[in-house]
Length: 304
Picture 1: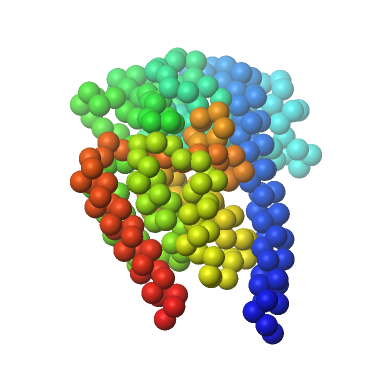
Picture 2: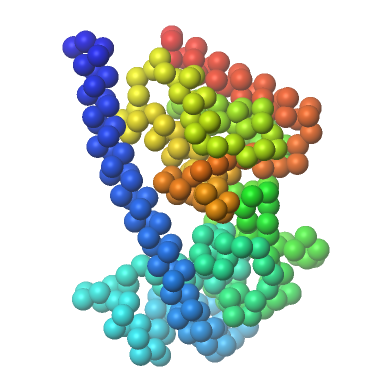
């Protein structure tokens, strides 16, 4: 089989896989929109439930679901299917109402910076465990904010709180130099492609500006066009890796934004990216050098 024929086979596989992945992304985006749309109906019921909880009384999704079935007239009729299974919004509504849940920023009013709101900040996850929810009491469980970082938002506890509590889930952070350096140096041990260091280096060179994904993709293509494309297509794979690192341990400090400037994890909505953090010129130079070494390492390994 010729190289041209191999390329064409991989291209067709990539198109097919890309369509499948696209459907999954669209489904996730639809779920988030549905949660945001119905928050006004769920949250009053959740608030009423929390008012019945003792200060140290723990609850979790199953108990909350039972409460909704027994105490509301609409939930069982509107939100359960014929088999009695939840249609996928209650659990997300709970996350959106939990002050130390990192994923709450994907829903409704939590997408914008704000302070405490008694109608929206209802639960606290004990030890960062979303299966151990208690009624949120400001002060006792810390003071929590949805804080603006450059171009996006994140869940954060007030820096003046004497006791620090765990955040439930992984979140994109306003990256410090030490954390970025450590992540980048460790990345070589499980590096499968050079898309993250290429993207990070491009953002470092343009720091602190936001960069259009179209410009980043050209850089990725230029440094990879002599390799065979991935099953989903090179730029589709790159977009997935860049957007997913926001919620994973290999966080490169890259944050993705949609056309409206809101932080996004949806691969179909990414319009721009930027590198978060307050970094000096010396620190940027060191990070750029590390990214350059990672890119060179990948090329040497692929050519061996």
